[in-house]
Image 1 (cartoon, helix red, strand yellow):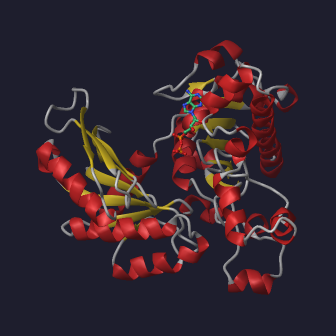
Image 2 (cartoon, rainbow, N blue to C red):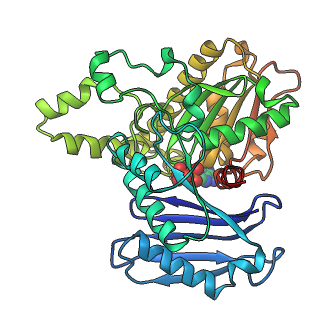
Length: 404
Ligand code: ADP
């Protein structure tokens, strides 16, 4: 079933046209710098050339004012590189929506009422949800002929129990402002959970895992019996692991200290914690390839950045093993998890006492695998897996199921 998957950011639009059964990606693209004079679209398609052929690349530059104009530009590129109908009938458009609050725990067919509820969640995710709403509205205007389905980043974490989602603050304030842990990256944690179950040869409802989504954003998830029971991101994606530009966990008093003592405004602190912290704050680079390069060249800040990054992940692995009581596997995924043997090696180093040990040669050779790889030593009680994530395929599958 042919599905267009849309991921709208504040100034970007990512999309994929894919078939949920054959898993063929017919087109994939990115619109960047929406709202600026230097907008650019990179559209790669194999609609005209066929499934076996490499993607044809088409680029377009020039101002794109908003998400509606972005869809017009994308539709024009689809028309130029082959009509979608040539590869099948589009059954729906699947949208990645960051914040579903506690209202949306399943993929949801979108109508104007749903858009209003998603919009009402904007205060909970001011950096992300307004763009998702703009993406939904523009895509529905551009493609009214098919159903649109919202797939929420928070949905997989709807099974987290109160003990894990409740913040220990004044509960009248928490309830009034819907402050609790929601968790994000749920589509990815769910996808790799199902894949890990396949590798382990168990039904998904019987696997206990610690999944580590380490991309530019990063989060850990404790999975019991195939369901999320704890995750490191919280009310917003700022909490938890050290990320490319986000701090992850810190003493909340640091924010007040910066406001009262350092004279920063709340908005400045927010921007610093989200955009100028994490790896970039520690050493000036958010891409781990660059951080490694600097560290290898003797840059002490970069080496410390690696240590802080790894230390935080190890803390969460230990905590989640304690939460779960047992685990079948630790799962690495996303840009860093799939491509960075050095980070994986450091994360599990010295965990033999917990039954975790990897084949270091296989680990070193595993970079961007197309299929899951089991790095653990034979017989290690807790396996260590690298599982390539595929959020677009998961969104497409959930979209196809919702429209069926
Ligand atoms: P996003 O969160 O943007 O979806 P990805 O999951 O694609 O991110 O991860 C992007 C990050 O993955 C990069 O910022 C970089 O740190 C890391 N990365 C990608 N390729 C490699 C690699 N070969 N080695 C180390 N890190 C990598």
